[in-house]
Length: 291
Image 1: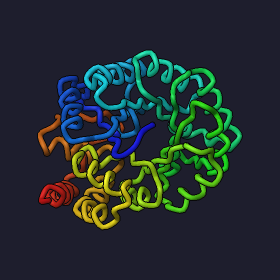
Image 2 (image 1 turned 120 degrees about the horizontal axis):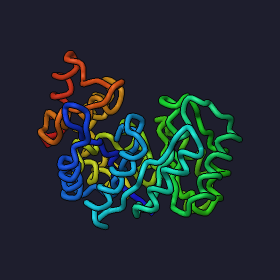
Image 3 (image 1 turned 90 degrees about the vertical axis):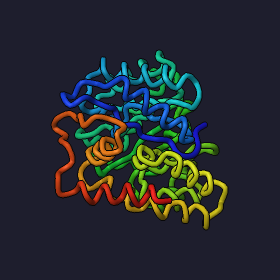
């Protein structure tokens, strides 16, 4: 259902942490103009963990309204409480999202059976296409390929965002999943190779900064053009690396601030990018822009 470069959109804020709706609308247009293939609102990069439920739903609603059907909108609706995940997913469906992206329950450290039952409960409660999201580096919970395979047989669970950065996971998931189950990279540093090996696209942090370049790279990789895909990815490598100098979304929000796209607002416990990293990040932005 979804292919290519899908941006994990930041949530712009004023310096006091209040939501900046004008900047959000401008970011949506930036991505439409740049060829972004789908927009993910309220994922990890969107600071889903620092917004309350009312704000969370309001951001999803505003993004959907601004996009106006021009590209798909995928709403981040994961939570470490199954009921909260159901509530957020219902909100996404009511607002007209094309799909929901649900991170594995964090902090709780559920068993594989607990993960299966969690996602099964959300899928049965809300009739909307749902994408699993495995990022053990942030959640302390690794959803194994066998569990993903079990979940792939549930009709409205249509794919997974795999963010371990382990390329062999792609083949492992394919072997145990139903035909047509989509597998997206959640790791910018390895996403080019991931797609060349048969992945369906990427849900990207780097795309916040370079939407056009990421779109072109994904397009080339999905067409099997290794030479072009690697060439396009070459100038993006410093961004792939340096957008994680501190915890995401600290660096990407600072980069967008430096580009004049958003104000410098971010919510505690997240902080603005430390001064010692700012020159390095600016050099990475310049490296990507030179091409």
